[in-house]
Length: 478
Image (cartoon, rainbow, N blue to C red; front, side, top):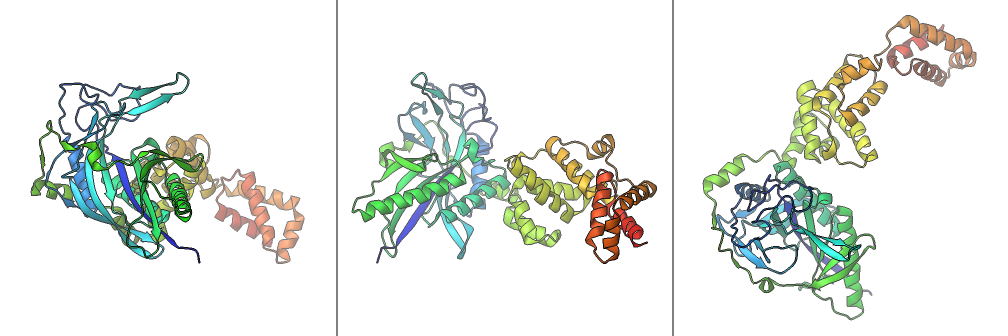
């Protein structure tokens, strides 16, 4: 009988905080920008320059810690993590080892077997390194220090996850909490949320953990899931062949769907950590903690419950709408204007989601204003346009944020309520289609649908379907 293996996974999640300036200097944290333009003597590690802590970084770290049930180290300080690498200009990174700001927290995820708590060992503040750009044409490496000194929190989980599904659920949960707090946009494709996966396997029932490897270079949930599956298989094959798993850092190549060794895994002593002599310890008062707690917004779990009770939305709708903070904001602001929660939900969940999928965009990329969506809903309510036309108008609102009232006026899209014109069109169609009339009189309702469709086409979709149905029925019944 073949052996059964269990995968043990812990994550180190780096989150780039949404501050306007870097952690220890006043340089911009904006994404993009020409190389080395968001830099100064502090973030390029010039001798004699001194770091000054950005208070907003502490606020964001505190907010995330409180939202993930962490204890707070009210006396915490920064340490130097020494390593020599071209994108690290000081030859050390300012981080927290001995007294991180948050410790011993947890978040709850939904799994196939029910709810499960994933422990958070600690959350610490640190600075990001620069970025190496490998120029194969010139056969050299260039370094861009724009990202150097961008504030990060590192969220270190306990090894509590057992599958790729649990890992993705945990990351989704963290991402939503952090986005709702406004602490980061958590865009994996821009590197503002990055996860390193620590993974080992052991025989089911074994008390000891196996030897773990760490996988880097994971910038999408799909890549993370594939990397976990790939590394699990690789380690099991080594064990089955009687070989040893080596503790090392591996780089995942998503195109080849395989990983390769980068370096042997360092332990804390290899970094020769010591307290940073240029930064004073941080003292977090009870009042400061209370102030951050009081400012915490409504998080997804509470929003879900409120959408069901206050707006009477089905659970499915509420889950989709709260699955993105931006989507939830658009929903709430539109409802505040028009007072029609189910109608707003329907437009966002069907048409908005369809267009996002077509354009391969995320809800965060939506740029139309809630005011214009509310105006569109009002035009339908007042029967100024019908729903068929409204879909085309919504597409224009979605793509260019046009004013729907002006757009309907300029494109002549108002409902045709001229019954004389409608009656004339219907009678012409009935004359051309005597068979449809005969079929209808013989009890075939579908025949009427054909004439209704032809009428709507002749009116270019601008007639009121209810009026067209009524007139066609009257004329065909004669």
